[in-house]
Length: 312
Image 1: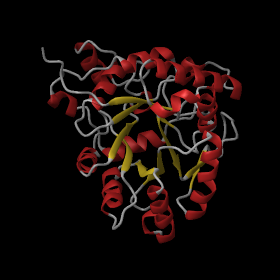
Image 2 (image 1 turned 180 degrees about the horizontal axis):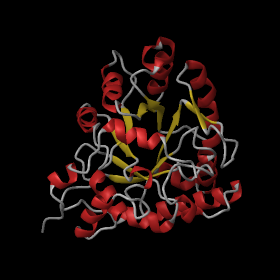
Image 3 (image 1 turned 30 degrees about the horizontal axis):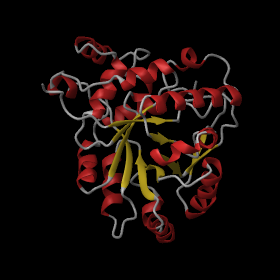
Image 4 (image 1 turned 90 degrees about the horizontal axis):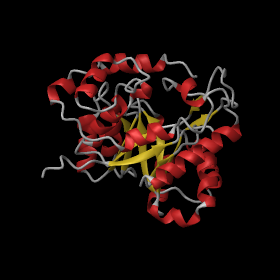
């Protein structure tokens, strides 16, 4: 019996669990009004417990995800026997500046400098209580100064030589260009990437395949397009395809990402146990490739719409 294509592993990303406000659709219904630090810590720990029970062994955080590293670190401290089975990924290059406010004018600030790395690496170690297995530059774009900063690159090479897998995450319409530039850099310290890929924005696919072929760890983020590809979104054509395939839209979107042959891990951004269960149940769509490809939007339009999303 044919079980279909092998699926990439599912990981849990903490972007939506580590801070009170984020850009995910349906967040008010998912989280309610209590966004206190204590409430969000409890929710993060509960989802981490559910992820562990569901077989998830890849966990992702970042310095800019509010208290995500701290929440993950306290969960790890409570379950030290689990650490050896886990791959922990985090990111530097953005700082959370939202002050735990829903109405903050600015929630995060980007800086890809040696000084930022030197400040944030010790912060990551303190929050997690140990070294992450993978450490990424957060949201590398083609114009980032990081790829031309010799002192920073040397420090990242030292980190890679110490056993931490160093890489980049990418965002924006030119993800593929940024990834190729990082991969082709002479003496590159990078061997991992976390990129946005989903049915609405698959434009980085060729570059991700090249990274995979070069032996990189390839992680997909935003597979449900910040909630647009979930029952809380309004992508009616995608929802119809999912229904015809016998899946919820979020499972359909996650399954499409997990079925990519170049993908190692797809991150779930679940904030409820029901969402996590739907993501864990995802399977590769049986929908024909032409219908799936027709869902894709122009990258510039997709990212412009993303930048306009409200923090709720």
